[in-house]
Image 1 (cartoon, rainbow, N blue to C red):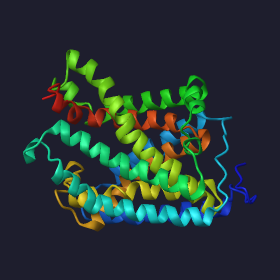
Image 2 (cartoon, rainbow, N blue to C red; image 1 turned 120 degrees about the horizontal axis):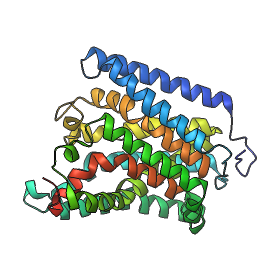
Image 3 (tube, rainbow, N blue to C red; image 1 turned 60 degrees about the horizontal axis):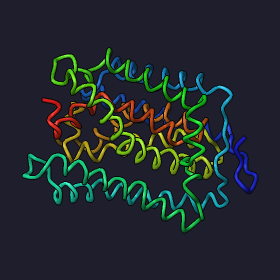
Length: 327
C-alpha cells in the first residue's frame, strides 16, 4: 500500500467509488447531450469506451499484475494539492491565451512562417509550461527531484524488465487497433506516406512524440496531477479518476479556439459546452489505461512510450509534412 509520510492510507475505497460515480455521471450527461445534439451517437461513444476505456485498461491491468511500486512520499498533500490546482489554472490560461501568442510569434507556413519552426516553437513552449516550470516550482517548494516524478536512471533500466514489456505490448496493441479500426492509417493506405519515407518517418515521429506528448503530458497529468490528487483525497483510484477527467477537459480549449474541433467533427469553433462534453466522452477514457500504468509502475518512461505509440499514427502525416516526407 502506498502511504504518505503521515501514514494516511492511500487506498481509500470509499473515496475512489465516489470519484468513479462522479465521473460516470459527468460521462452520462455529456453523452446524452452529444447524442441529442447529433454530435456523437451512443454506439460510437460506447464502442470507444469499451475498447479504449475498458479494453486497454484491462490489458494494462493484466500486464502489470504483481507490479506495485510506491510513489514518492508527499508530506504535505493539502499544500501540494492546492499548488497543483493553481498550476492547472495557469496551464488553462496558457492554453487559452499563451498558445495563441506562440502561434502568432512563430507562425506556420500558412501564416507566412515555417512549419518546422512552428513545430519546434510549440513543442518548446509546451516543455516550458507543462514540465520545466512546474518541476522547478515543486523542486524549490517541496524538494522533489526528477526521480520523485518517475524519471530516473532506474526507471530507464526497468524498461528491460516487465515494465518495459508491458509498455511494448500496450503500444503495439494500440497501434494495431488504430491501423485496422480507424482513419489514422489512411495516409499509409492511400500512399500519401510510403516506401522509405514511411520507415524513416515512423521512428522520427515516435521520437518526437516521446517528448511532445510523452514527456510533456505524462509528466504533467500522471506524475504531477494524478499523484497529488491521490495524496489529497487519500485514494489512488480517486487520483486516477480525477486525472482522467482533467486530462479530457484540458483538450477542450484547443477545440474551441484553435480549430482542433474541426478535426474531431465539431466544426472550427464549437461551443464550450460541446467541446467539454466531447472531451469527457472521447479523451478522458484514454486517460485510464495511461493512469493505470503509471499507478502500477511509477515509471514515467514506460508511460511515455505508450502515449507516444497512442499518438503515432494520428500524428504521422502532420509531423512528416514539414520534412517533405508526406503529401
